[in-house]
Image (cartoon, rainbow, N blue to C red; front, side):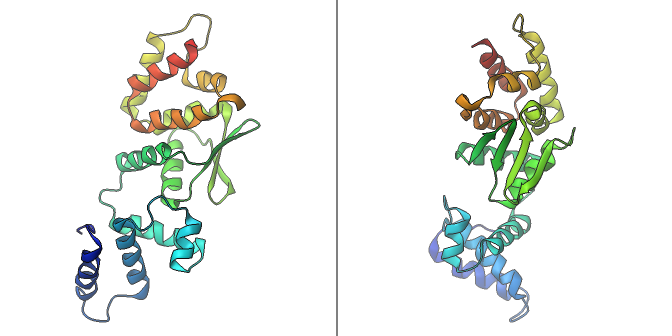
Length: 218
């Protein structure tokens, strides 16, 4: 399906989709999802939090999330691990709400598809992610954050990461990803959490390894 390129093309795209099944045969829910998709592609919601979108559409934030999720599932092409990583990387570059609470890393996801995608990638090896803290919050023990980051990498890149860390060991310091992240993250440099997530979602084990070793050498 062609994406919306300008405000003038939205009506034509809607009519084409609406009439493709015959007049009156498109269910209301699908109409709502498609209109949401067109508005999002046009940029109506760019940079806006769920609360603002809710006010624009005059619906509840819960309903906005539902439309967001359905629109992504129905209209995104090839919603595979690579696309999820790309979307996560874009999200982490936007400086989302990330915090450190005692021994836990907290990450906020307003987009439910991104939250599910992050949890699915991070859980491939170990069950380390707790999403019960809140509907938008993912909570990870700081001591296990490195393993979650490694879980975001593809299997091939995770092996490259291990080799890179082994190759450039820092004398007197543990050089596995779990130990490094546990050592370098604290209340004074919480910004590193977002930077580490960006490197993990790039899915480049060598580049990620060099960044980690650089942190350890400081």
